[in-house]
Length: 348
Ligand code: NAD
Image (cartoon, rainbow, N blue to C red; front, side, top):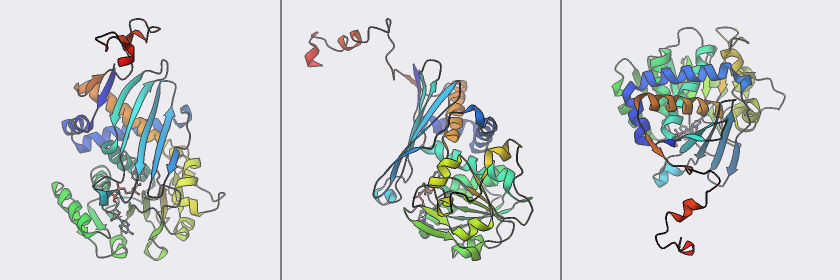
């Protein structure tokens, strides 16, 4: 039987241990998976683009587990009362192909994206960061804010969004963190001035320039999260050229990341190599570092493994017959008969 976790089940799991412990645990799973990068069969995700959005499939596997995530990106969705990003996914046993887990991944993606940002920032940011400017206050924003506050010690977050009501929502939600100073900024420029970390997490299906060279200061770490699709970028190309760039899976980021604006030969660094201690991250306290995050399947593999282990431990979720349980695996057909009380196959 397959374990099924819906949004309520995942919410209950997170409530059971608390947001901070949930993110700490996920960080541990993710760092250990990134450290054994070469064990994985990796590919860039497949994407079906349309006028207003994209739907993507993200597979990855090692010798034991296979996972995939279905995820969309539709920046106009909030006007329709729907989320910009929605996701679900599965974890299977490689030896048999049996699906072990089928799970919601919308909430989980927001946590995993924030934790991936922390995983990169931990090895790239300058000493003792205390302030972060966040441009984009949509669904992902609070997850980034609480991850940087609780896991990295950032105690001041400045916010900017072209939609003031989005900022108000974030300020209200972050009231639960009394040691975090949250400031509404009048402009993107004021938001990032003097910040140790800048997170761009806007949604627009266009080559936007959220961050311009005049806004960037020596030593900043840029956590570029919203530019994650062909034709959808946030960071001015001159900033990219002036900093040291780190990526998840290079072939995917070349297509989807902010670096799509650069030549294919522009040097980038693999973040997993820094996490694994094989390469140095930041070269100096003055250097500008850029994590060009697009979201890689391995991060979802980590979150699915983590959710599965937590759900088993706390006995949360439901087991469902996602694939038939058969006494005789060769006799699939007899399974169709048990639903027909008149024995008439054509009535099925
Ligand atoms: P959302 O639609 O809920 O929020 C986006 C916010 O950006 C909105 O509040 C909007 O008003 C704001 N915005 C748009 N243009 C702006 C601008 N020029 N200046 C300031 N604010 C602006 O979307 P979300 O779910 O929060 O996702 C945000 C982005 O992050 C999306 O582009 C999504 O694709 C991306 N994302 C990336 C990853 C990753 O792994 N890298 C994971 C999840 C989401």
